[in-house]
Length: 306
Image (tube, rainbow, N blue to C red):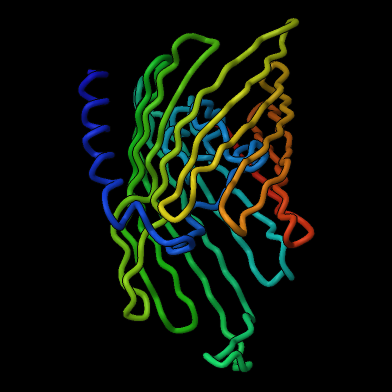
């Protein structure tokens, strides 16, 4: 079974990464909000930890997060963007066990901008305009101790002024836990079809991520999770993501991360955050810096397990 999965994944990957869809000019993809962090845990660890999913709240960006839904869970992610306060990014997610070995889940998200200053082709100011984007997805995967897989499908729409583009996309992922101390995983996200925008051909923000995670338990109830991932979106150079999480009894977590990005105009920086579990209640906070804007984004999650 594992050999068949790997062969299929390699064959599919060789097609997905061929030609123009995988070699897009820098910044040439659209609907980039679909590759933005929405989970505080992922943001705090700079996007690392694809092989170490412990929060269902990550399901909007990592299909393997379904495997974290050991009990039914519903929650909301809120991102406070570093801007003048005219935009908002909110998503809701859920995970639902199906039988003993499978999980269903999904998410819906909305990103809105108001009062954007308009400029014509000569740089002269025109009327202000608005923009918004939204997406909805549903997925299905396994929830086992060793090998897990997940797939999902997504519909997304983006409107800027009076022009709209739509997308039909998919995600797929697989993970393998060698033992309780070591695991690795890979995901392919946002592959599929994007309609033309203003009669211009658009490309989806397709991305490949692969990573390894080591878990080091110590003392009585403490554990240190260390992750190293490689990430590439179709219009970027490879990025190297590093993250760590120090947890106590799976109820209190401290997180930090660092991303090495070599693209021009991209930013490196140390991210951080924390997580708390109070019985049925899950709370996470993350901060990711944006040095070019002299600030950063704040991420919050509030979830309920049933």
